[in-house]
Length: 432
Ligand SMILES: [Fe+2]
Image (cartoon, rainbow, N blue to C red):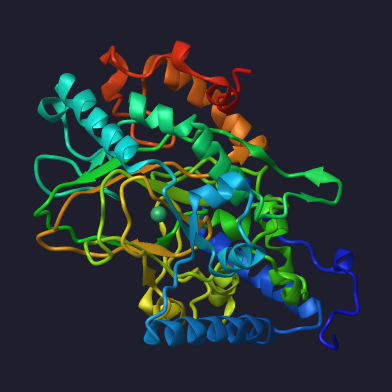
């Protein structure tokens, strides 16, 4: 290919990097943007050229998705749990999963099991007087209106832990992890068959609810995506003249480095974010949407380098706020925003960790909207570090370090106990 650089990347100018949040953010943004542009130029290409390569790919994906939608075709891939367990998922289904970056697993759990977990969570919080003691949202990101929460800052119910350490969850996580390239250059970046049991919350949204939803955003990081040494390596192909080799499924350098702290951070590396449905949900009742294009991350990372963006602006990305996907800078991507199909309690929903997602607004919701957030967070140096803190908060029933320090469950004696851990649970917490 004629556009390949003549010089090796070793000769390209180095990038400044900040392993902790820079003191002067605008200055650091200006500095890193200038250095990224200089590095692309030294590779023999221009920012405009590199961005155009990605722009054409994304445009083709958006066109394909909008055409399929007009034909009435389903956009979200669907795989039956039974095929994952039996190892009979056809390669065509795996290819579609990697193409769209998202998935519904049908029948991941029996519907009765999921509904039982939902009732179990209600019993758990009511038996501990949660609604009487609830002090309001501990963060402003998922803040809800009214006296009862939609997001419950609850982490250690028997239901959640049973699901996290279940064989069925482990099988699906291993299947999803194996869509990534997790070994390269003699390094095994993560273990696809061992999950780190990342503890997250639950959502229970009752019938009749009005919800403003959640704006389009992504979760893999903020300014650290451009500014830490590990991330600069992870996204190396965007900035060293080899844009054609960028692969959103390459785990190299994704599983080791730091993340800038903030109220919306996730310390873990997740191959996929996910949740398990604890109620039936119709597709038009305020459900999850994604931009089902995993490679869109390249667009999001390169867009701030174009000359129409002010030098101290990363298209609105800053620390301690989620990475916004906006009409102003990312309107092409948002054309592909697509909601999940109808799901049944026990189905699970997954999306690539870099993908834009949102939750649609709803008024007068029909039926419940209940989910248990359980991602795929395979064992790797980053997740091993976080697992040490998870062990501690599990033993004391505290809120995990990534979340507001609300600690509702410390005195709740019917929370999941260490003796109830199975082998998957112990391995996930680094206890064996
Ligand atoms: Fe998110």
